[in-house]
Picture 1 (tube, one colour):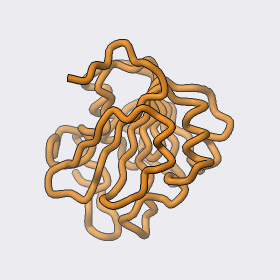
Picture 2 (tube, one colour):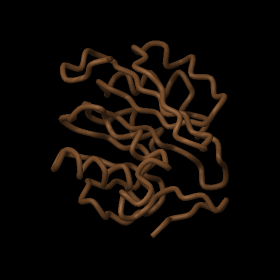
Picture 3 (spheres, helix red, strand yellow):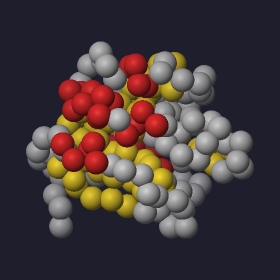
Length: 171
C-alpha cells in the first residue's frame, strides 16, 4: 500500500520494506541504535517501521500536524512541529521530514535559525530530509556527518551531530 501526496508521489509505504532502497525512508533511519527518537513529520510512519525492524522497541515520539494512523506503536502527537520543538524534552535522535501537503519543497521554517537553534537544544543527532538546492547554512552549528541522495529522487538526506555519538563511526 502506498500513501500518495497530491502530486502522486508516495510519502509513505506499507509495509516499510516495500521500496526499501528506492525511497528516502531507509536513509532516514539512524546509523546507530538511538536511545530515543523524535520524528517531526510522520505521515504513514514508514521510517518508524524501519527503525522498529532494525532496532526493536526504541522509544519513538512522532509529531505531525495532520491526523495519522499509528501503525508502529509510537507516541503520536498531532501538533505543529515548529512549535513543538520550542519546549519539548531532549531526544537522542531527531528526524526532520517536514513537507507541506501542497508543495514538493521542505517547509520553509526547517531552514530558519530559530528552528535549528531549537534542534540544538533537544537533539544529539539530527537527520534532515530536504530537496536539492536548499541552503543548509543554519545547520553549520552542527558537525556535518554526511549526506545521501536516494536514487532518482530530488531528496537529499543530511546527517548532523550535536555531540559525539559513541556507536557512530565515519569510515
